[in-house]
Amino acid sequence: MSDLYHKVSNSPVGRSVVSALNLPAPVILERQTRSNAPFIEGEVLISAAPNSTAIEAICTVLGASTASLYALDSKALIATADIKSKTKVCSLKVDAIDEKRRFKGLVFDATGITTTEELKTVYEFFHPVIRNVGKCGRIVIVGTQPSSCATPAMAASQKALEGFIRSIAKEVGKKGITAHVIYSVPGAESHIESPLRFCLSPRSAYVSGQTLSVSKAAKTKATDWNTPLSGKVALVTGASRGIGEAIAKTLARDGAHVVCLDVPQAKDALNAVATDIGGSTLPLDITSPDAPQIISEHFKKEFGGMDIVVHNAGITRDKTLGRMPEQFWDLLIDINLSSEERINDALFEDEVFNKNARIVCVSSISGIAGNVGQSNYAASKSGVIGYVESLSKQLKGGITINAVAPGFIETQMTAAIPFMIREAGRRMNSLNQGGQPGDVAEAIAFFANPASQGMNGNILRVCGQSLIGK
Ligand code: NAP
Image (cartoon, rainbow, N blue to C red; front, side, top):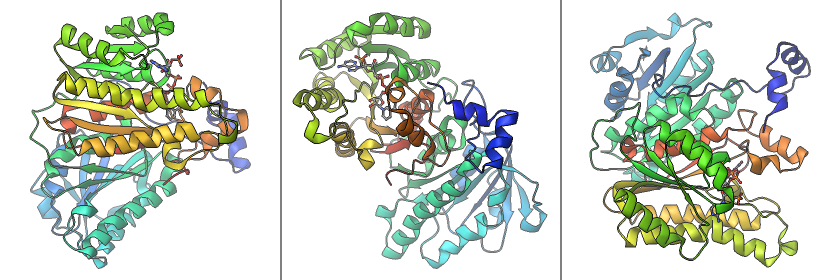
């Protein structure tokens, strides 16, 4: 589905009309074009609040990039000499930054903030340079998980980062700039590499104003960032089109063998996707009583196990509750929620999941905010969130479960929405546009990455910071 307004407003004539009428002008977002593209290029400015603990990990990650690193020289912040000793950076004084200078990224380690007064360091770092972030730039704060803070004062100051970053993301979104907080529990800082790379890269083009939680986890082997899923076997449900097709293609790009599953009626489209990516097919209705067993036996027999499952298949059956036929409720809950549980139960019971397997579910912002005519759909998608949050606490053997919650994504599903509601859905977010199926796929590939071992129980919105929901 193409967004005509986005195309027109980015044409030379359209741009001047949009500007004259003071209409929102969605920028063309920078997206990942090749798997081996550097995760960030250009100038990145870093600093930290005194006594912060993640700066070393941040320097290691950024030190491996091709970006030029600068540390902001300010009395209130960590001494630049400390940062310089960790990686190759140049120090930069505020008055040496002229208004034309453009940074690709601003990264701040706020883990050392323990009192609300010390929050001032966030202001000290971002205030002088926020207007120097270039188009599609990236802003990231690394903080300490508020629930793991030793004192209420520290929890307050760390939680404050969330409100700060959500506001910043809204202020700069019109330029395609995104902003996030990565919360780490103390001692898990070595696991921030994967979320930091994701948040700084074009892979997170349509993700903004989010928090990601990093928990303690076993050490992982060094990752080949170009093909992180090499040797892995994945199942993607609903893979014949839309978001599922994009997920299958993205996981295959990252090196996985993908088993593409969809209803038997979609066999031709499914074959085309699988052929395109060198994967295989499993035409199956996930609600059929024997589906969990068929999937479980297929993976055991063909591959000896499973590394990644993406529960993407889903439907909408919209009607206000009073007018909703019973079968709309039953079928939707069965496809969007119950079948995922049954499939996972079988995969656990038959010990099909390999060590460090990844389960990724697809929720929706409708499940966070609710929507008129979608009581069944929103219930199913909130249910997915509850399921992920609960199961994440029980998993063993390095297995993780996370969910993505897409907002308005340009697919057949959203093409069916009436025009006015569709236009509102597209524009009511900080980036003023709908997302692409590939944006959701990139977030899923990030959770599927072996380096994302510290990511468990996260619900990541892929919605351009939709104004709907929290
Ligand atoms: P889509 O284009 O309708 O694709 C979904 C696929 O799942 C279809 O091929 C569908 O087949 C298949 N499917 C449905 N029931 C199935 C079953 N019982 N067994 C196996 N496959 C089944 O949808 P999409 O827009 O790509 O959405 C993918 C996921 O993202 C869904 O979970 C959706 O709720 C979620 N999501 C989408 C958006 C968005 O803006 N598009 C926003 C938030 C969340 P059929 O042809 O039979 O329907």
